[in-house]
View 1: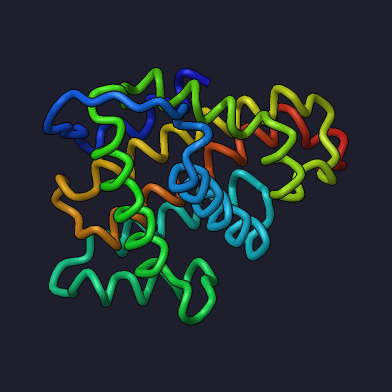
View 2 (view 1 turned 180 degrees about the vertical axis):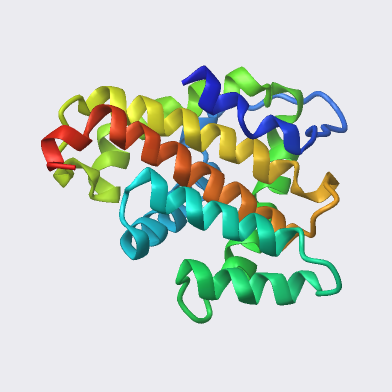
Length: 205
């Protein structure tokens, strides 16, 4: 899981302006819960369109990277191409998700400041995604899995890494929308690896 967690850090560094504290654990913050839910929602859409085969998701990831690195087209045009490729619904494409996640994260930074270390984000994401409340709300209790607890923990590590990736999108050479697509497919591939490791035999894959 450490390998999965570190995969996304190459995209840049997160900047926090000043130290602050919060009486609320990050796992209980509505904006953080929404971000975790939305990032996993995008991953589920990709899985629904392409299945959970690592080879299929890897090919999607490669195509997204090609779009992100395309020269001579705007970030909005890249988002349109990625929306079509990933099968995101009209009106709820990359622009919607990237803007929502970014706005939420900016508010979270103001509240938590330097509390938002990599390890704190990872631990809070794991605690949230392991909770019965999150599992029941997301419908993941219905998913068959040979080693379900380990799959959830692995998926949480992939999600926390994606959170760091998305947080760095404003400081990369990629536009915000293209960067969102890169982070989303990176997360989805990491979760596919989790599924292959802990769930695939039971599912017959």
